[in-house]
Image (cartoon, rainbow, N blue to C red; front, side, top):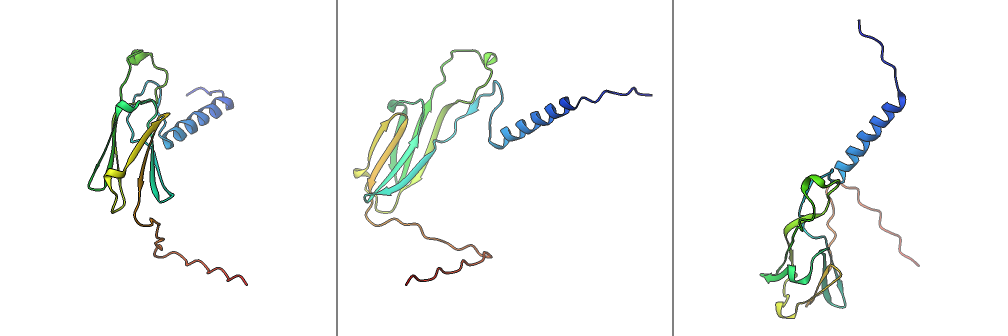
Length: 157
């Protein structure tokens, strides 16, 4: 016959907390201790201001010499590489979330973009590409099938 074990409620709560933390970390793609990450594409934002399309890309830890910008067939390509500096051995890491290696990000430009008029700058780890656009660029709302149509707002008097 097996002996009885003493129930320790705080051990159970601690186990639940660790499991919750593990699942939350997985949900947000957090890496564990001593795990090297692969390079992700840089985060970008794009917007229209004063009849110019502006595209910004975050490339922290890089210098301008580490980045190549090209345009081919209305596609802007941002390439770069973040080189790993061997300061410590892999076994000495407690946590490692910084990504190293090469990356490439492509952005389709509006029709009629003149590559000769594209300008780019680099400051504090952010690339900013500016180009004039010939026609107004606006988003078109596309209704979802099966969705309830919204009630039309009443006209103001």
